[in-house]
Figure 1: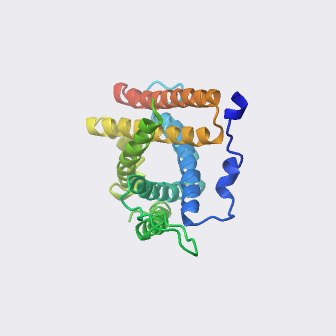
Figure 2: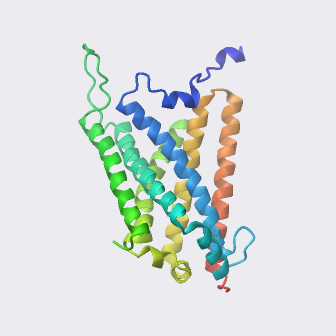
Figure 3: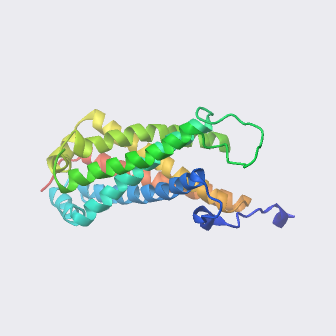
Amino acid sequence: MAAERIAENKRGVLGWINPHNCNAERWAYTFQRITGVAVLLYVLGHLGDTSFFVGGPIGAGPSESSWAFISGIVENSFGHLILVMVVLVVTFHGINGVRLILAEFGVIFRKPSAIEYPYRPKGLGVGQKAMFVGAIALAVIAALMAWWILFEGPL
Amino acid sequence: MRESRLMLIQYVTAAAAVVLVALHLLLQGVLVPYETAISFGTVLASYRSIFSILFLEVLLVVVLVHGFNGVRIILQELRQTLAWGRWVDLGTVLAIVISVGYGTRTILLAVLVGPSA
């Protein structure tokens, strides 16, 4: 029966943020998905605001007044705070994504071994842990640089 | 298209996006001062350079294909029915076509039409 072939993911999106039995790899997975969706939403908004360079959705060519109009809306402290957050999540998503690609192709994956007490997960080796921590650290550094550029001036 | 091929596309676009987005961010504040980078004259000048135009178009396609394919993967995991899968695939293709089309329209208008006040 068709109904028997349906195997729904009962936990769904809530399963991502359930802290029960979560290790670092699980949190990396959760953050990768949340930051991915956040970046896509920003990109769609960015498509919208950059289109005002040519007058917006119904524009017909480069327009200085239209560009000044949208700049007046997004170029303020709140808009710059959003940009700092975007740099934070984009940097994390990018570096953690490189970790996932390397793991997918077995480059930084630990060798399988016999299951022994106390049954610690073998997936996250030193290389992967270092890249996960590095992704967080570099994201914070990049966000601080963005903060400096947007609120203090050129580096 | 086979799921393995779609995942390969996801990884290839991811690797390309890391390089392209890093360069894009560097050009918007580090290599070029932020105030200068977002000024009307600088943006207009970037649409007069073939390298800059190609860079923006490739960035647009790579990021949107990666982003919407990522959402497709998330949605495919939530329910595993044939109908759901087909609707999600169709929605993904439509979303990519519409968003890439809108971004390309911006680039084409900026490139082909002269500026107005």
